[in-house]
Length: 232
Image 1 (cartoon, one colour):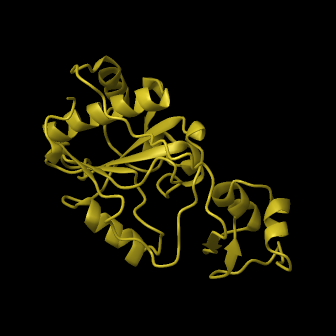
Image 2 (image 1 turned 120 degrees about the vertical axis):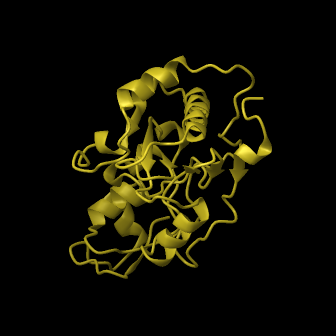
């Protein structure tokens, strides 16, 4: 097997901290085109600690990443691939977020982390039919050139991921659930800076007109922070 032991891969999608009322929107698997590599900007941490912070401090529906690779190389599966979570702004709709624990401005990723990153990236590339050129760092995405993330030589990483081959069976991350749409009556809580157009495009995956039909009486030019909007 590609993963030498169960301890190197943990599915914690159902156990990590989640908001009591908010939910991430979902997307079709076919929309995913890019893998995004992050570092946590912390010297230590775990997927559980990040989920606590994202929910309790940021007020997000759950952890922003799809996968977290801890310093010992353990890969933690945090969100299903259909989940459109928060990790790269306007590109969330087509990206999978992979976060390595560490602050790589002043330290290097561990060897175990890099091995797990190669394995995970290779598996996702095969599952999603993504080539190595679409394995990108956070700072390579539109609007994030200023951000020191992940402070890894991404050209070198792409070359190594492309050539990485340890043999054995690659894990599969796409589940045959048949669910590609949001559940009925899903709502979104308006955040500071949101507009109806942004909500329609980034969270509801529909047109403003469709959103207005779901929310009769709403003023499209005066949505307010904390307002609840039905998005499905």
